[in-house]
Length: 82
Image (cartoon, rainbow, N blue to C red; front, side):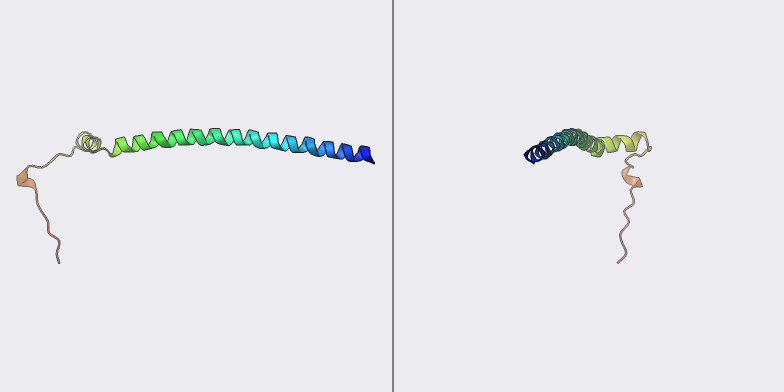
């Protein structure tokens, strides 16, 4: 009877150690994924800042959309009706 208890206990310990190792391996994978996502997030923030920069918006408006600042004589101010 004692031998059976010993075997069952040993199997329980082996199973527990195995589950702990699996959990640790998954933790390592998740931490690596988190680090990669944090790096990508920081890169995207920098990219967003570059695209939102006034000089960049002005450059795209002029070069790609053909926009320009109109001369003072061409500016029309429209007032909202009340």
